Image (cartoon, rainbow, N blue to C red; front, top):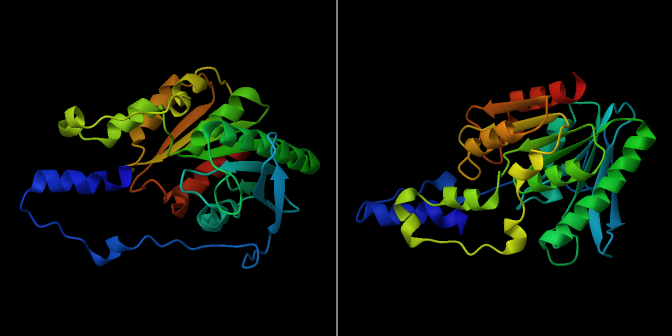
Length: 271
């Protein structure tokens, strides 16, 4: 529903006003990458299927390098597929970092149907994979969650041993997020019936008990998860080593294209 809200609001408020749809607005193109097409001077990509603790096999990529000084487990957002991960891979390829990626169950080549408990199971199993990689390469392990993946980043950071965690374009808590999707003028007419399993995911509560180093990043122009959510999480975080970065001009999915994005991750992991 959220993808159509701006158009619905515009139609309700504009009456007979003409709404302009430009040619560039009609396409949502993504550069893709596959194991067959992947090419890098420093990273070696290995594809595998990992069995979760409840018996599903999820498609995973390990992008490893001989000079790795850190390992990063990446949790993508709701629309994330590994084939669309090129911007994040390119950003991390500028650092001496191993990258672990995967498709949630029901996404890409991972079978099954997504559910909250199922995706939490995926995250636990992938943490075990990433921990083994980090131990093999003798590197610290960081976790990085984008949007919906920020729930998984905080979930793992709360229960497992990691060096630090990154929340990119994060959601603070679900009910507040859905309220932000609807302009105040229309709130009397629109309500959300949120499944309890979804409503239970609350980053605000989790960060209050996590003392690990934390980097929060968001875009000034993000209309999916507004930067105010990042600020809420920063204020609530129990970490004594935390930083919040607003990338001017950044939107929900384009932060890896900004030089500052790369610079801030490098600083967080290596300085």
